[in-house]
Length: 405
Image 1 (cartoon, one colour):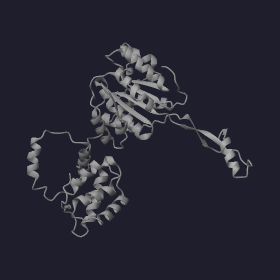
Image 2 (cartoon, one colour):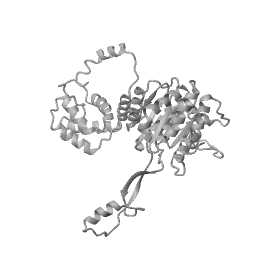
Image 3 (cartoon, helix red, strand yellow):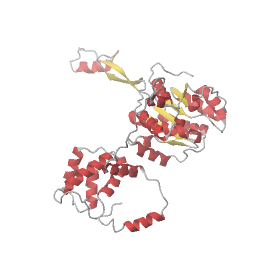
Image 4 (tube, helix red, strand yellow):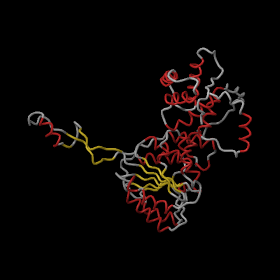
């Protein structure tokens, strides 16, 4: 928390005259490195705002800079971190020893997304390390080999290393999901429409004294159907759910009418959390909202809760449902089958994405899988980037409808 009426300390760089403008420029560069969209227009507004407040009042300066440099609510935390680090308190050195003793008494905590972003942004001022001498190039036979990108497309998510998972997340963010547009009940005026609009024609004729000079036409409005995702985050799905949530975050920020639910032992709606543009802040909010990550699984109870509380809200206008789970249920299989049947009858397409289909000899031997399989419209694997690309192509196919696997 920023103390009231605290003196504003400027970094000791540059001459005394004109130091505020130079420091403001350096502060805006720091915010840009931290990921905030700060441009020349915002910097000019911030300079004008500083001329309207008392420079010696830290609270007024903080409020003026945040009002002109920050446009989204999720960036407030990053801005506050940057303000405390860049515009340092002049008495911070005197209290450094006491703060160190207090920090030693506390339990170590994992830094948040804002702290990591600011640490990376502050390291941008340091000169890059000298490049290491490269070893002599070796002659490699490139015949019958594949590139790293091709290997990444076919590699299983569970077998990826940390660096490969990071590369897969970057590739997932570039995927687009253009669902096929479906006709709605609404019409709009269109000069080349197929239907005649009698009401609009009579209304226009009144302006001409009752003479019909032109016949109005209209066309039916088409828009993509709603998309609902139900993702299993139990212990058996934790490795896949970690990457699939990135895919759902990209989908939620790319189109409207998207609802996302996570379930393990309980059902949690995370649509609002994944609407945040910043991935790190979105996943941090999801981690706070979901208490049962990598825990047990109750698929039947979660689907029953969705049918009772959410189906009428989000499954209208021919919604498409993505059910992401391995189907390993320990509870009553009959209740799971009934919940899946009701879910399938409430939507236009129910697509089951199961990572167990990566095995060539997969057979539905589990009771949960056998109870769910007769009611789904499509049964697809989801274990690598290639399977996600096939899913995008299937959802974009206008010929797909309510068909069983």
